[in-house]
Structure formats: C-alpha cells, structure tokens
Image (cartoon, rainbow, N blue to C red; front, top):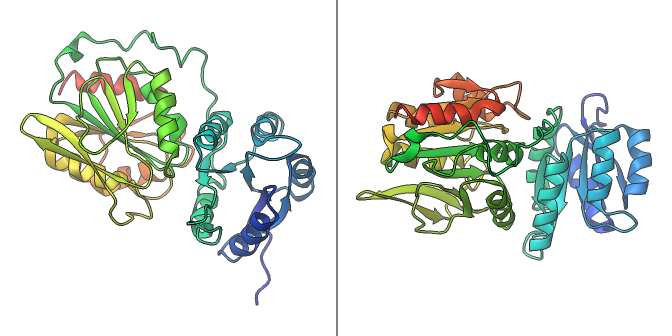
Length: 353
C-alpha cells in the first residue's frame, strides 16, 4: 500500500465528541484520493492545540460538544486563525438553525450528521467532495454594515410594478448561502417571483428559508409541491428534492420531485434551469452563484437559447469559482458581476424585459 503524500494531500482535522465518528471519518476519508486525516479532536480545546501542531487545510466540526460548543469555537477560530470549516450537524430543527449560524460566522459547508438510516460510511464520499470544494476556497466576504436592513435604499424601482410574467431563477452551492442572502436582502419587495436551488441537506433548507424570510423584503419559504411562483416571493428548493418550474395557463408554479441525483446533487440547478427555459423563456432572468462543479451550466445555456438574460458571480467574489466558471465557459452568461452588484444588475435587467 502506497504511503500518503502529506505534501500534496489535503490535510483534514476531524473535531467531534463521538469516538466512533472520529474513527470512521479517519479511516474512510483517508481512503479517498488526495485526502489525509492528520488528526482528530474530541473537543475545541484539543482541536486548538492540534491546529497549531498539525496545520490542517480543512476542519470538519461538530457543533454540539462538551467543554465548548462548536459555535463559540468557530467564532474564535475565524477571528484568530481563519481556515476552511465544514460543519457536521444533526438533522434536528435546532441543529439546522445552529448550522446556519455557523455559516454566517464563516463555515463554508454543512453536512447532515448520520442517522440510523444514513451511516457515517455512506456519507464519506459526499464529505470528501465537500472537503475538495472548500480546500483553498476563499473565505466568505465579511458583510457590510446595514446589508440586512429590510428598508434597503437604492434598488426600488417603479418599473417593477408590472412584472406578472417575469421570473428569476438562481442556482448556488459552496459559499452560496451567504451569497444568496447577499443578493436577496438587496431586492425590493415587488421583485418578480424567484425560484432558487441551494445545495443543502434535507431539513436545513427549512431553517435557511425561515432565516431569509426574517431578513428580506420579499417573502421567503421552502417550496412545496404546487406552490405558485408569484411576485414578491422566493421559493427555496427543499433539500433532497428537485424543484421543477411549470406553467398552467398564465400561472407559474413548481413541482417538487425526488428523482435521481444530477451532478451528485438533489436539488440540482440544472433541473430547475432547464424547466425555466421551457416554460418561461425570454421572461426569465438567470443567476448562478458561487459553487463547486458544473451544476447549472447546461441548464443556463438552455435558458439563454430560450431568450433569457443570465448573470454569473465573478471569480473575485466567489468562494469557489466552479459553477459560474462552467456557465461562462460554455457561453451561457451575459453578464459577469461582483456579488455586491448582482441585485442592482438584476433590477436594471428586469426593467428591460
């Protein structure tokens, strides 16, 4: 058996109070190509010492631990020693809310902690993919003061008063929770209906949508099968389900389906974008944000061919310039825009549709 190449492998530190989780993560992650678990820690105090000693590239972090909770530790870590962090959280409502708080503090990804029906071993490949995604990723930009204010000036538009047939479709992944929040909190309450796919585990999208609803001028909810796409509302695809955009007469609505993984994802932006191309065409505006891989690129190209105008987040402001880059490379994008300007650009485009 070949010895691991510590100089080229991604060095991972596993922080979890469960000895079983630490053992299985160590074994199975180290079996993945290009990844080596260089150490484990049962709590943040041990983790602190091992970070200094082992200099890991990525940390997987449980958020419910003894001696110091993961949120407190993460806040200290990002302040004094920023490093890519993947949160491993329970599927409970409390766990998902805490995980979202962790993302706001700088964690880049979240993965569901195994349940009886979903073993630690089963999640090792998915976790390995996320480790590769956040490795060398740019840590999220610090939010500017006032960006979560509901009464945001400067993006109101009288031209948006008659937007019945217009819609916006958004796709995002790694780093996308903060990017999506950045865009949505800057849009006026009379913005056309938005359908959005953010790669997240099941159960987490409920808390994510609820948090966005508290921050945005638009209403935000986790989509349910048959929900109408209407002005002033954002529908977030539920975790582990695809969201398909449909039309019945003058009514736009969504269907929520299981279906196979697409680009290893469910929900997948490609599924959403291709359905938007079919049923909305030139009435649609597409936005693709930070994320690993190429999900959304092909679907966005279909949208463009159907007459939509598409925006991609620029490389400088992306945590991972994967999905936007793929869409740009195949000619699916009309405008490449910094995250701080996407909302304003979207509004100006909608005024011309």
